[in-house]
Image (cartoon, rainbow, N blue to C red; front, top):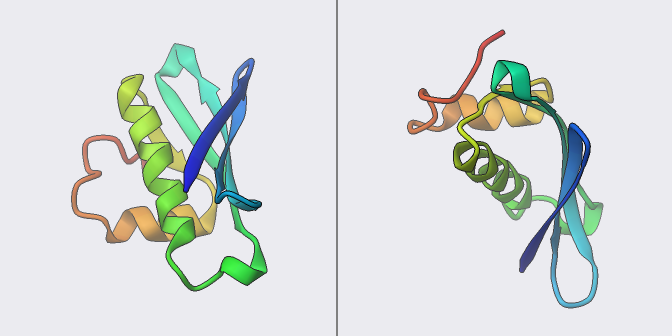
Length: 96
C-alpha cells in the first residue's frame, strides 16, 4: 500500500492505493496561522470497507499533522470517532 499526499494551497487529499487502484482518501484543510488542520472527509471505497483502511488514512493524516506541528480538528465524524478511541493523540486533538 502506498500513500500519496496531494497538497494544493491550504488543502489537500491523502490517498491510499494498492498496485492496481485507489483504496480510499482523506481530505483536509490547513489553517497555518492557527497551526491547525481540519480533516474534512474520509472515504474508503466499498470493496475495501471493513478492513481498517479508514483508520490507516486517519493515522497518515495524524503523521502529516505531527510533522508540521499542527493540531487536528476532525470535522469528519468517522475521523473524530477513530481519534477519540486512540490513546496517543491528546497532544494534537482539538475538540473545537
